[in-house]
Figure 1 (cartoon, rainbow, N blue to C red):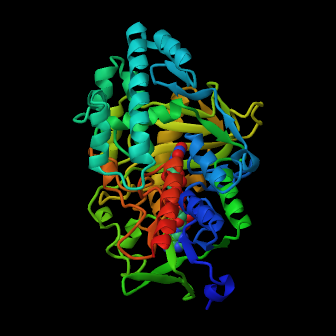
Figure 2: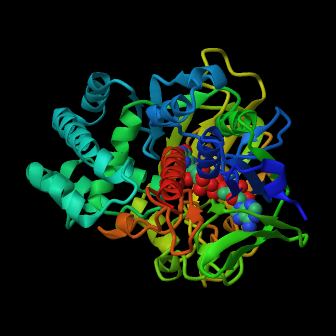
Figure 3: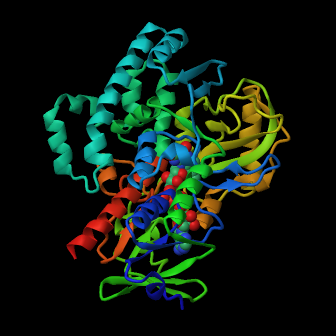
Length: 501
Ligand SMILES: Cc1cc2nc3c(=O)[nH]c(=O)nc-3n(C[C@H](O)[C@H](O)[C@H](O)COP(=O)(O)OP(=O)(O)OC[C@H]3O[C@@H](n4cnc5c(N)ncnc54)[C@H](O)[C@@H]3O)c2cc1C
């Protein structure tokens, strides 16, 4: 047995199960606060979804690609007496993304609202440029209004949010509380391409545009405020947080699969690994999908935690190609989107658990946007939205069909890759479910559908004393910045509860 008590003296013993960015952010803060922190993860390296896979041009990202909300990461490092820039190199992107449609049109959006308005004027005319300007102003106001009482708050409540709206009643009209993103964007933009472009932000939190509340269009504002490329790939950011946590004394044990969270008399006492090894702790932070607790995948001791995940729908999954190749065709930026001809068909198929015949295809050209020419053989991550695991039959020959729906579609846009990747480069929803247990392949926790979905996520504190949650399945939700904030909420709750006991 691993005697954490003797090893760590009188310091509070904390185990963080999961080295995803939420777990890492929490571990770093607690190690800095003097806890004896042990981070356990079943995967071979830290980062969770911020993972990389091998390619013939070196490691390539196979998880998140769009880094927004830089201040969240600056605050994480500053709070432990460090500087983000000393640990990771972030390169701000002038071009947020290039967008392509099957009719041959394309639109490049940048980090400059005036330039974007001019680009939309040229793309779709002055009325749409006006609509875009209004959309930006409205989303800026909504983002500013809900940042503090929702994203930054550990325990947001209907009362606090209502209080905020009552201070500025004009927000109600901007929120369009009865509308979905798709409906509100179709009201705002006459050009269906623009409605399709901004509705895609629903997928950033794993939602379908026709079911995600209009309010979540404010995600655009996060992107408008800046997008950064991490030198070395997104994984390098997770690695930097892990390294700093380690420098502050956190112990990392990778390849450590936790089979049970031990609870006695309503209080957490430690964890047991698949190998049978038992580790004792005063505090356990669970960074995996909270549904794992409710489904008793980690024993029955924490079965009453996050039970809402048993009944709420799951967020989207994805099919992800990560590979190295030489492209030929349109000039790519770091982020590129090739839109489906019919956005409704795409999401209707996904809602039915099927692979869309004509998908929207996102491409991250990882080596671009770094101030130098890309190499001959470049690294790419291609993401297609997919249903989480449902009762619908799994597609036979999934990789082969996905290949047919990805690369010939891109060829119709004039984009080809030599060579095209093979099956080994694809991660499917079942693959994500294997990587992230009990997730049903969902990449963003429970679905954001419905006006109150954001308030129904599990919080950092649980009904089991000493057991806390951090990660994208927990408030304030998915995405690298949000999961990082959840780590802050978990660490703050742990430190506060310790003082009060
Ligand atoms: C393909 C893809 C694209 C994305 N794109 C973006 C994007 O562009 N921008 C963005 O901001 N976000 C994006 N996201 C979402 C973002 O990656 C996640 O919200 C965030 O990284 C989740 O972090 P987390 O803290 O929830 O931990 P996770 O990354 O979910 O990690 C959880 C960790 O817990 C470990 N674990 C679970 N159970 C156990 C156990 N029993 N024992 C030991 N270890 C365990 C797992 O191995 C894993 O390492 C994307 C995600 C994916 C997959």
